[in-house]
Structures are given as C-alpha cells and as structure tokens.
Amino acid sequence: MKRWVCPLCGSGKLAPGKPARDDARRFCLPCSGKTGKLVERVSPAAQRAAAEREERRVAAAERGRARRASRSLQERERAAAEAEVYPGVLRVLLRRWARLNEWGADLRDLKMSVRRRADAYSTGHAYYRAARITLTVGTSEGDGYATLLHEMAHHAGHRRPGPARIDGHGHAYYRMLARAGEEVLGRKLELPGPADRRVNEVLAVAFQEEVAAGRLPAYGPGKPRPRVLLTPIRPMPVVLPEALRGEVRDVLDCMRIEATDEETEEEAVLEAGAADWCRDLLEENGWRFLPVHPSAAGMWQRIARALNDRALNDLGESADLPGLRRLASGIWRAIGDPRGD
Image (cartoon, rainbow, N blue to C red):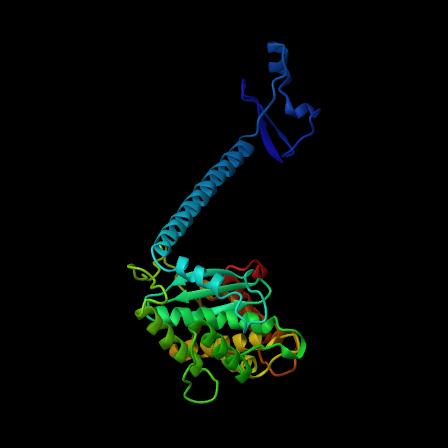
C-alpha cells in the first residue's frame, strides 16, 4: 500500500501502488467538487521512484555514449595507423596468390583482417567456415608474407575433396606449402631436409630477399606500433581454496590429454594450450587464485565448463562439490558471462 496525496489540499489516503482507474481513492472528492474537475491524487513514493529510474536511465545512456565514443576513437586510430602501411599490400598479395596452380581451388572468396605487433614475427589463423584469415603482422615483410601464404595453404588443403583433403601441419601440408612458395617465387627452394615446419623459415628468408631486390613490395615507410588500449583491462582473480587445488589440477590434466568425440583436432590443441597457460599462471602465484582475465574469456569458459561437469558428474572423487560449483560460478561472473548469473 502507498499513500496518495491531493496536490491541492494535501489530504491523503492509503491505496494500492497501482489503483484501478475508477477507484475513488485516486481522486480528492472535496477538491473535485470545488474546482468542478476531477482532482487526481499522486503518490510521493511513486514519484520519487520514477525520478530515480529516470536518473539511472540518463546515467546509463551517458555511459553508453561514452563507451561508444571511446570504442569509435580506438577503431579510428587503429584504422588510420594500419592504413599507413601494409594491410593494402597484403590484400593485393591475397588476391594475386588466390589462384595458384598448387591450390587446386579458387581462394578469391577469402576475407582477411590484419592486426599489428611491435616485433618482427607474424602469426595467423585460418577459419574454414567463415572463409577468413586473421594475421597479426610484425615488422618483417618476409615473415608476414610467409604467414599469409601459410594460412592460404590451410584453406586450400581443407577445400580439397575426399582423401586429397589436407588438415593440420603434416608432411603433405608442408610439401604443398613448399610447392606453392616455389610457384610464387619462380624458383626452387633449398630445403634443409624433409618438408616440415622449417619450410616457414625458408619462405620467410626467400620473401625477404625478394623484397630487398624490389620484386615484392615493402610494407611502407611506417612501422607497426603496439596497440594501446585507452581503458586498461585488469585481471580479476578468483580465490582458489586449498581444498580444491587437487581438483583443479585434475581438470587441467584432463584438458591437456583428453579430446572428446565432438572436438576437432584444432579444438583439442586449443584446449590443451589453454590448460597449459592456466597451469603456468597458477604456478606463478602458488595456486592461491585464478587470475581470470576478460580478454581470455574463451579459455576460462572451457575451464569453468570442465569444473561444472566435474561437480555435476559426482564420481565420489571430490570432497567439496559445492565448492567446485562456486568456483565455476565465480569464473563466469569474473568474465562477465550471463550464464554465470
């Protein structure tokens, strides 16, 4: 019940928070008789609540505008910094190398996103379903061009039909990559042995020689700068109780050595890498807390799911199943995932 007060005479009555439109308590009958019009009572509590809601709405809108402005500024700065050097060069080479004879497929539908790093080395990833390549490119043109060809070779091998399909980093893949490099360079590569990961190094050196000779374009006068976040993101540690440290060790060991039937080889490798990374972080702080970081949310999601599965599938191995559930929920909350609510 709330108190409803007449704005003219100040008399009040108790009524529900939302009385019916024909409820007599909504109106001050004496003032209505004097004025000749219905005088509706108001609820001071409801007015205060509405004012507070409006203040929260305005504050949230301001925060949203500030976030969008900050994000837009970061994107503009990053786009301007990238436009001054190499992404255009890499996209030209992506189109030029998309129809090599060695591929046996047309790769002109591939999309590419490029990020920068301050050191010389480059890394990349091939996303088959999205037909996309992501490159994080350093200052060395040769290493960047070799990484681009490396990721294109993954797409070409994946698109080969039936038993000719090539996935992963096997000898067949590196032989295909070496032949593609020879087709691009127009000469034989001098490999130190069987086709293996050393093909990447040989290609990087060969491409750098082509750049020095002027047969391949250089990135340009600018050099990559490390990305600077306007708002730094800090890790949010989750306390790891001593009673659960053995359980967490078991979970990480299982993630390192076991692959489920639903996992691809690539997903299993990613999960093993996440487990190794988490174990290294835990070793650094003496297994006292999980240094959860939102920028690595995918890794912590996998670990939280594994902890949840261990808690739900009570095998009688844990002395603190509620603690496992609390630990998993703490990870979800720390990375801001709604599934942890």
